[in-house]
Image (cartoon, rainbow, N blue to C red; front, side, top):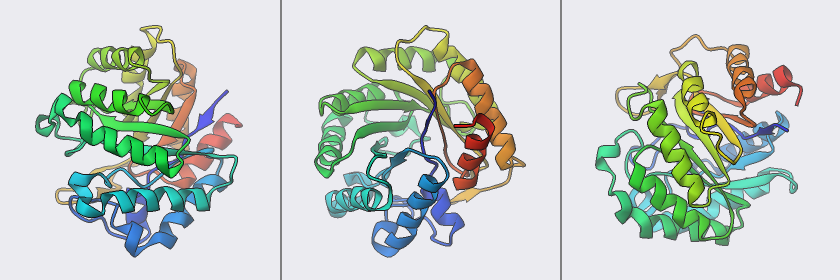
Length: 274
C-alpha cells in the first residue's frame, strides 16, 4: 500500500506570492498569510495526499523566538482545520540550525530543544511526528529520541543536501538503521534532488530495514540569498516517473519536497493509480 505524504509549504507559499523570511523561513506566514497555508493544505488533500505536514519546520525557539510555541500550536490548528478529519497530521521537527549546515549543529545537546518541540506538537494533536531534513548523526538521533518519547508514530527523513555532499548513501543507510533502533516507525530520503534520490533510497533498502521506507525529493535548488529557484526542467510527470522508480525499489511512502507542489502529487497519484 502506498501512502501519499504532501508536498512543501515553504516553496509553495513563495510560488503563491508569500516570500520566505530569513531565519524563520515559512513560519512568518502563520501570522501574515494563514488563509494561504490552509489553501495549500486543501490543495494537497484534493490531489490525493492523506498525510499532511504542519508548517512547523521553522517554528522552533531558535527560529521563531518567544513566539515559537504559539506559532507551533497555530500551525497544527491550521492544518487540522484544512484537511479531512480522517487524514493524518504530521508535526514537522527540523534541525535547530540550518538544515544544510550540519557543521552548525549542537549535536546531542539539541535534545532538550527537540523534546520541547515534540511535546508541543503532541499537545497540539498531531497524529505523527516527522523529524525531517536531518544529516548530522547525533542531532538526528536526539530528535528521534525526543519524538519517540511522546508515544506517537515517528518518521525520520534524512537529506544528502542539494549537492548530495552532506552524507554518502552508506552513511545515510547506517543512520537510518540507528534511528529505527531507537524506535522510528519509518525512514525516508528527503530534500535531495529527485535525480539523485534513488541511490540513497536503495542503500537504505539494501540493509533489509524493518520499517516502511519512502522518499520526497526536491525540484529546483536554493537561491543564493533566500528562497528557491525552480531552475530545473523537472515537470510534474517527470517527477512522478522518479516516484514510480522509488516504488519499484521498495518505497511505500511518497511525497514532494522543495520546489514541488500539488500538481506533482496529483501526477504521482495518476502514475501509480493510488
